[in-house]
Amino acid sequence: MPVPLIYIAAGLLFLAAAPLPYGFYMLLRLVATVVFIWAAIASSERKHSSLPWVFGFIAILFNPIVKFPFPKEVWAAIDIGAGLLLLITKQHFEQRNKK
Image 1 (cartoon, rainbow, N blue to C red):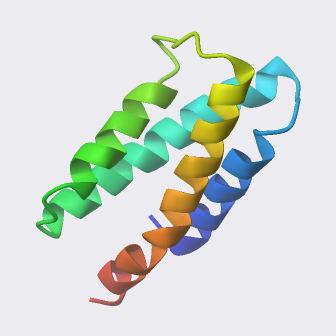
Image 2 (image 1 turned 60 degrees about the vertical axis):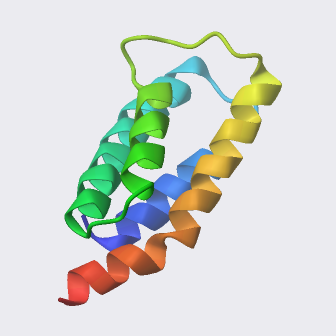
């Protein structure tokens, strides 16, 4: 997955902290699930020990099938934290694409 998609996903996650229509959050669930599953697989291929588990857990949190009933404030923290994690680990995926 290209690095610009990481920026897009992180931007959507940061935007999710604002009060938006329900449809946006459903789209975010789909996008975040796909991005974090991809990140878990890519991290596993690079033989990281904990990153695949972290990305997999976040993918489960965002999955569109089973919804977790956290308050809006908790979801805002999860959204921001997940966006920051993508930006922090972006370099890991840039290196992967160069090889």
